[in-house]
Each structure stands twice: as C-alpha cells, then as structure tokens.
Length: 416
Image (cartoon, rainbow, N blue to C red; front, side, top):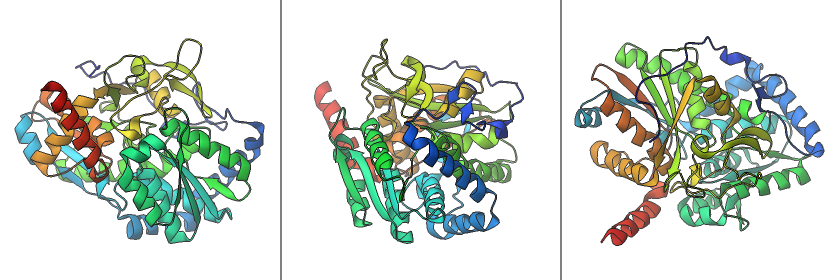
C-alpha cells in the first residue's frame, strides 16, 4: 500500500460548496467533453436538478423514500473485536451495507429516478460493474413503474451472476457488453450510446461520481447523507470527530459521500483506497493515482490509466466495481490540493480483509469495500488506542462469495 505513514492533511481552508463551477469544473478537472447532441440535454438536466434541489417537495419525497424504501439512517458500528484484535485505533464502520439492495448505491439511484420522473422521463438506463448500482436502479424503477435497461460487461456478468438475476427479477433488461475487456468501461460506453439515441424520453442514471457535468455533482449530493449521518453519530458514540476516515474508490461515489461533510475539517485525515490488483504494473491494476496520467475519458478530464499516446490501458481488480480506468474529477481535484490522500490495496490484501472482517466481526463485506477495510486494518495498527478511524462499509459481500471462493481456491492451488 503506497501511502506515507504520517498525516499530511491540508491545512488550507476549503470551501466545499464552491465546486463545481457553473461549467462543471473542479479546478482543472471535470467539464462536459461530450458530443454536441448531448450538450442541450445535459444543460436541461443541470437546470432540472438545480431547480429540484431547491424544491422542498422534492427533498421531502426523496427523504421519505430514503427512510421507508432504502432504510436510512444506517448505523455507525463500533468494531470492538477487530479493534481489540489489532491493538490500535478504535474502528467504526458506517454500515451502508445494511441498506436495501445491499450498498450505498440506492441513495443516488433514488435521487436520480425521482428527478427523471419529475422531468417526465419514463425510460431509465444505467451501467453497472459489481451490479450494486444495477440492482439499486432496477429496484427503484420497479417501485416507480419505470422501464429499466442495465448495461453490464459480460465478464462482470459472470463475476456477479447473483446481481444479474436480482436485476432481472425486478423487471430490468440486462444487456451484456462483449466489447473490449467486457467490464465497466465498456458498459458505460454502451449506456452513453443508448442515451444519445433516446435522450428525449430516456434518463441515464450514472452510477458513480464521474463522467460529464452534472453527474459528478448530482451523485455527490445524493450521497452526502452518508457523511452527514456519520458526523452526528460519531459525536454521539465517541464524543469527538474521527482522526482518520477511509473509503474504497472506484469512480468515487461512496468515498465522496463520506468525505464531503469533513473536507473543511483540516485535522481529519481522509484516505481513498484504489484497486492495486496484482501489483502496479501496466494492465494489472486500477490505481489511477499510482500509475495514471491526466486525460479525458467518457465526458470529463481526470486521472486515467492510459498509454503514452492516449490509449486506455487494460485494468484489473478482483472487484468488478473498482475495475475502471478513470477516477471521478472531484477526487482528482482534492488529490491535487493535497486534501485527500490515496492508497491502494492489492487483490491479495483485499481478500485477506474480506476474510478477516467476516471471521472477527461476522460481517461479510463486498470485495470493493474490502479494499477500504484492508487499509483500515493497516492504519489502525499504526495508531494508538486513543485514536478513532471511520471506514465506510459501502456494500455487503453476498454477491462476491462465489467469486471470492473461486479466487481463493485458485490461489491455494497455485501455492501448493
């Protein structure tokens, strides 16, 4: 895991509400790098969101669904046995895994589906990697009576067969993507093609805090509830704010949802954990800050894994949800400012954490989430018992049990 052991949190005063600007930029990152045919629909979407955001009736309806359908608020859980076993900092988990459909993704799917309905759109499309955004979208579309099409890479469909069936059970059409690596990037490509063709009656519920404006802003705002609840809960449980906060980062929705509330607290160390895969070698990982460059992909300027001539590199992660070549532009901005630090966990480290949390606390985390858990274990060991660490437990691991078993048994066979 590549990260200094001493805190480097920025002391700069950060106005978190100032970003993005009116054109969707977080400093030099973000923007709207899209075909001309999408500029007007994106502006219409921006206007509709900004109007809805200020409408008390929209907020009230969203809050009702978050409570009654999704199951908010989620608990902040003190992992006493893991804390005792490691002998270091006190570890708390924000239990987004307890939400309906099994992950934080329902927060954003709910918000965007209600916005689409407000705009008169009756058809919803989405991309998914690990399937958690897909099942969240399929679930709320069933509830609201909306047509639903989910794009998913064929390799991810193999890895996440349970979630594929769950989506179809909720009435969604799941379209497999056979192009390229058959993973998340290709699913986003196909969803974008669909949206360009059917934009007049279709809304694209992008599943992470990436892509073109206004998606990073909307997704962040719909997930802010994670950090808002955490602030109140940690003050009640620990009587103080945490010393460090940790979350896994693919596109970055669960992480920015946790971190956003604390960006203006310079003494709190914020750490995002990317997928180190089999190691930081070309095509073997998905750690953008460890091996990437600044470029443009799928609508925005950000950090991307790409070759010297701008071709997108192959990526790898044991977790389908982190297996993506770009990171959300807001993360790129705060990394550049030095406010959020980024580490990575390898497949092996994530699988170790997957097993450790299951055995010690009886909680089976998603493989994506296991990357954050892995780094939480490292940091907790390095800190004294009077310190407090909060990790976002962004999803549960039911969907990953079969794949984890396959990979672990393969590793055992290889080492025999």
